[in-house]
Image 1 (cartoon, chains in turn cyan, orange):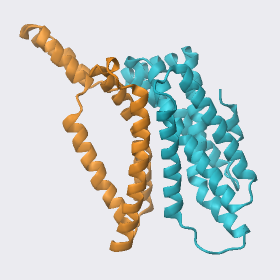
Image 2 (cartoon, each protein chain N blue to C red; image 1 turned 135 degrees about the horizontal axis):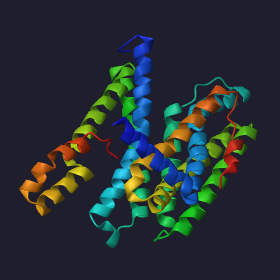
Image 3 (cartoon, one colour; image 1 turned 90 degrees about the vertical axis):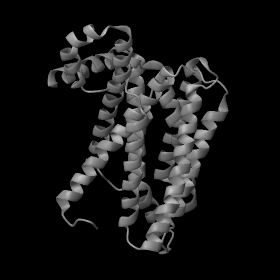
Length: 185
Length: 137
């Protein structure tokens, strides 16, 4: 069993390495979803320190903030569904690139912004970008990856993402870094 | 908390991480395979539309479960209850998956059984058994 699964991994790896489109999607998902996980980890701390800077010590409504983020994400995915009736590889690639651009701009903005409510809205924009990101990434992956190796390729594409998150967490500093994230595509 | 043992909590986190990774890769792979298996590619329903709805629906469920979790914490007191509620959700999801998903291997075997005679199957039972131990995709 070990030998067959090792062979499976090898064949999936060679599929990823041999296909530039899959490789590009893999790198994008690694950085984008990596930044997303860091964002999920850091948003409450970032809002808390923004509140502390504004001189208020009132407790933040975390449940409400989370719901707003989810609503923004829903708006993003609705945008993906409604933007065009028929999605092609080209249009979806465009959506994906626009989304990565918006998300990296907003994350960079979130690092620079001092104002509490502006920070919140920048974060909502990031969530909306994430909402449009997931369907476009899923669609592109379904287009590019062949059925026979799909499960294996998908699992292997998750691996660099997890490594990325662990690595960045081990470098934890105050505030999230989003620079690695601009390298997409 | 149900356990004060840091080791147990750590193991729980580990299992949670593994299942999150599986959730993101396996479900999507299954859905695309099922989409093609049912021949939906020729219908009006686009795969991109399905993905769009999938994300929208997950957001709605996330909002609702946020509210439900909040209500649970407020009424029953204690932050353990949302975790227990998620156990119920996961077990029912696992039950539904086991009951309703047709595995690719199972289907291929059924097709082969229909196509080939029983004698052919008997002589190959060894190889099919070794195949069942292979990791599924």
